Length: 311
Image (cartoon, rainbow, N blue to C red; front, side):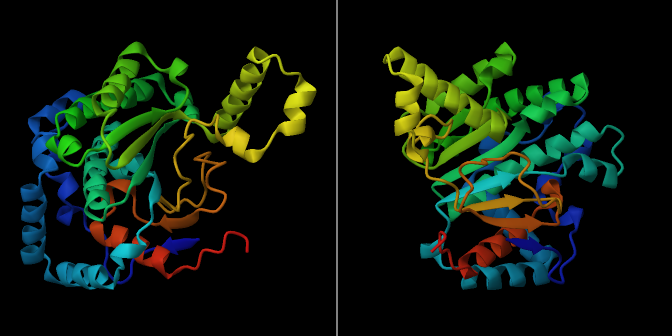
């Protein structure tokens, strides 16, 4: 476990590419006024932002290059889990009247984060975007978040790199709690990428770790009942591997590395079963302020650790 803060370079919202043009955004629909996802995730756009950052912030660029040189491309985590936290605090910090707008900044940062993961050939990425506990927020914010997911799903579907990088998308969580339009957006992502063989992008939506384990137990018992097996027979043969086969993430390797932003140091129910031997990294930056430098520092920290798996 690690907690990361400044490293001598203070966060500066003005130098973060995810904030470009955001002041005009009022709702998830208003995001259409900015460049499309196809442009945002294009290689040319990524290179252009790097050049601009190098010119405007040479110390930032030099430090970023130093971090990159120290990474071992053969020792990247296979599966990164991300708890993206701090959108509302970010919005308050920059004086936005409607703190929900912080989620738009966060959504754009996600696109950038996925660029970094593709660049470093991370095979699995799981994003914790909406928890079962989030349903207890004000109805207006819940609606806003779910509508934003629908909008961002459409943007992702139009992104050329979804095809060129063969990204496959899977949505996990308690789907029965989601409105129809959100379910349709989720299914569209999954169906359109079902044959892809590149990175697996798992989106945890209406997700809770306790709920996942409970649902897995229910599924296992229902399967046993259909097979005519008694509770005694199920109990006698029950193993951790059997239960894992009924989790939302069945068939996906457990996360090697879990990153949480905003300084909070807890899992909040994220992948409780799967994270038994995950490495954790807690970063002080609020999610919309999470920079490439923060990502590289996190990976550097991961590569310095010795994973023993209880041995």
